[in-house]
Image (cartoon, rainbow, N blue to C red; front, side, top):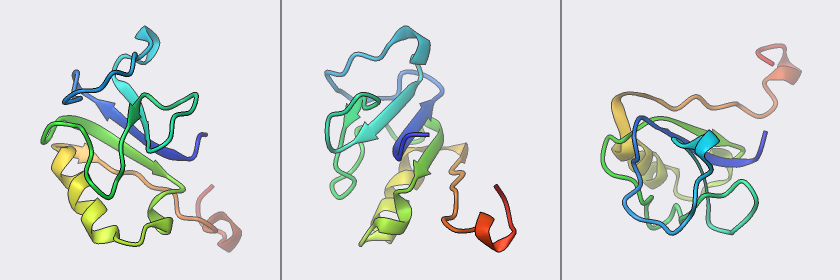
Length: 102
């Protein structure tokens, strides 16, 4: 899996972006601050995400959260964009080595 932030939206959740999302991934957006192949939305977590309040079902933060300097601000931003029944599943580095999880 790609390291980064992936947002799964229940509908077209983006406020605005020029990124073209392939039809097969209509409601799945790769988010990063640098352009790359799986990136659909360019955003800097330090200044916020270009998604409407409570507009996404899931946020997958893969190899991201443990590297943040200001984790509280980012978690507040993720809470803002997540729907009331939204989820933020997150892998914990090194857990498999300690016998828990995969």
